[in-house]
Image (cartoon, rainbow, N blue to C red):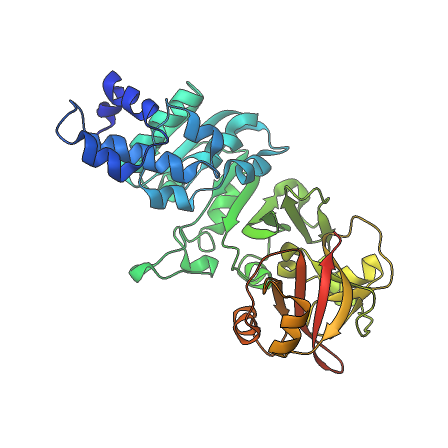
Length: 395
């Protein structure tokens, strides 16, 4: 869109007045009846509606501009961006891959000066407008390749941040760091020479051992989840911590659980105990499973695994605060449609399959049930075979 259009008072008033309107109907109703770019105004309304949950404060701020939806979809949420900023202070920081600027804005809060870099012209213009409005005078803006700017800059930064693009030609998703743009693996020596601290955002699909194989200097990996859904990985390097043991930290925002932290070597040394299902079944947070703490989780909380590859745990008693979902086992049932009708006459039960012979959707179809209600049906494998457990969630 033409940035100057947004300075049109009538344009901005229209956006404000129709924030909850149907974009398609607005286009139809006001076509040819307004003195500004109607399509651009409706795009602003639609983008704010899509971003309402992810960016609640930004979507309500009428001073800010919103880009095409793909840029918003790929940006961090206000919540995860806020997490990145905790404890980060200093003189200068730089965001090599500025994008929509959400991370840049939050990370810059503890710094005297920020540098925002972005190659896409429209996105650069939008974010320059937004960041200047939010933090007047704080940022220098660089339209172009962030790594090229870094190579030529004489400035030493207290923090370098990058969120490499994870889509290649044909829009396929990329999971290796070295395949992303910019290639932070190839530029690692440059990044270290220009900073005291480096923070990289990576795909939640990236394997943690792969990250360490590509960049052995990484000292800490944070697995970031929101309400038990893994959203991103954060890779940390700090000059002051060189030589420190590697750490994995699992943070689940909105859950109330403290971070689950461990050294990868502790997982290697931990041993699982095994048992058939007892009174309770425990499913660890998704972030803990992503982090690969399969043995350590059971060891820390006194739980036994059902089977080596099932990653469900059991106990006869439990203390509140186990980072995961806890289910009370009511009984084991057979995988027959008639049994499901007996125990779930409403045909509603929440189905979970972990290392089971069928996936959740296949099992629901076989039993003729749909997700819903307060009952749970957990399909998994124990040492004695595939099992189905009727459960109630207690945590």
